[in-house]
Length: 111
Length: 144
Image (cartoon, rainbow over all chains, first blue to last red; front, side, top):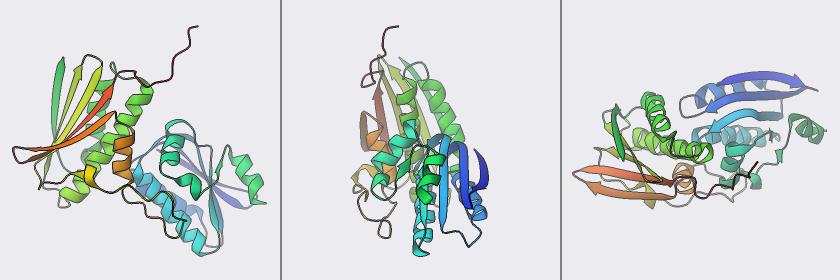
């Protein structure tokens, strides 16, 4: 698993590559915490380079979303495809998140 | 028919070995999409055993791979107390974000990404048997 964090127009974007499984999920969670500076209410998670995610990764996404929601913010999910998208779909993530095709589409929705 | 088995300590650190073993043996039998689903189901089953059955890490998990005709069967067994994960309720996939619980998704994935999932208890072992059938159920590959 590899992680790249940046800010686009002031919104933190965390891109993850490779696999999020039970062993790497805690590292992913730590990277998300690092990317949020406490002021941010919105966060974009980019899954365009992600090949695999298990329930351990979904737990991190949901915990992050709950935490931001309690501060009036939100998590936007971008770029999921293939098995990752299928996992999101069957987990019912579509009813709590909007899945954007790309980071740029998510950025456009933030404004 | 080919049969291979691997015994591992029931700790999350064994996950990579478990997945590599199943991945290697399913490579020639299953399409990439089916195989990816099986590996996800296997991770969920393995981690369930580590975290729920053996929180102290004092258990043993045996993984057996069997390729037979167009079927690929993974048997994941442990020497813990009787526990059938397939009896767990379906996960919450409808609540809004404040109420949403993440529990139960692992077993949901096991059911979804296998063609057949069966639990049995034999010789004081829990046995979870996951079956996938060749390339059945995959989208047709267009002739080019």
